[in-house]
Length: 58
Image 1: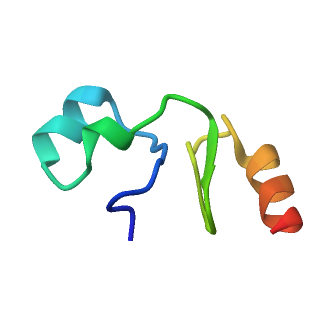
Image 2 (image 1 turned 180 degrees about the horizontal axis):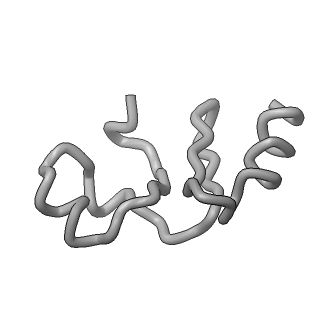
């Protein structure tokens, strides 16, 4: 689903690289990222309110 889309995720950069399933060039460090109809956020409180706002607007 994320292939070719900008995204954020609550993993360390090393973990993202080691998993090998995410496109590193599309990873952003922002708390919330929207790319078209896809909205991603970092967990543990960093972006959940902004994520809700993005979802509400979508």
